[in-house]
Image 1 (tube, rainbow, N blue to C red):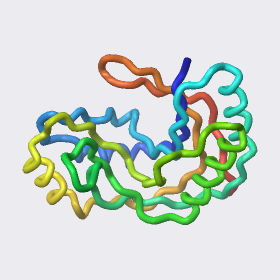
Image 2: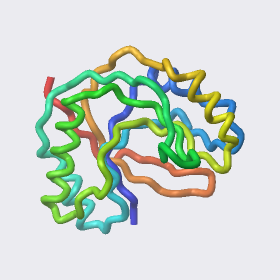
Image 3: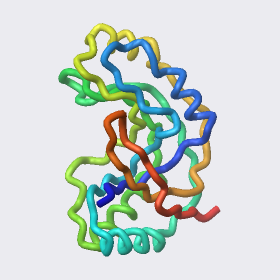
Image 4: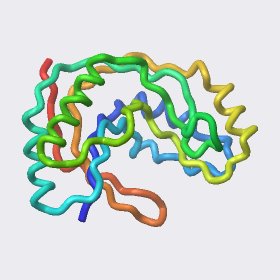
Length: 179
């Protein structure tokens, strides 16, 4: 039974920029640059019939190309021991609109609504008892991180299979956005 999520892929040059940040913190499990993406909606485990409904339902979403830019770094949870390091997304109304259309489509198919508020970010690492001072040094050293804007031309439905050394993501379907 696959775990599903909806995401935007990043251009190779953006992945390369992010990969350049991924070092220097003991206990960090860095995301493989080829696996880096912007999750729009985590769906979870589904059976075959629901998978087909989701795949087909997402095909009905209409949205236009838009620009995104990555800016800044941070961690989750914000006021507790850091568990996840992330790169931020500059505020984007078209991104929020696309996310709302995806959420509406999925809840229309009977999936439960997303419980958490959408906080667009790119996960860089999962932390396991990483020294707080090292995390602080990472944040201070990369707080001005920024990329050039890039155009989002499509989004994807992914399946994810967990393995001992991390998840393997597979594109199940792609959905082009209108120019």
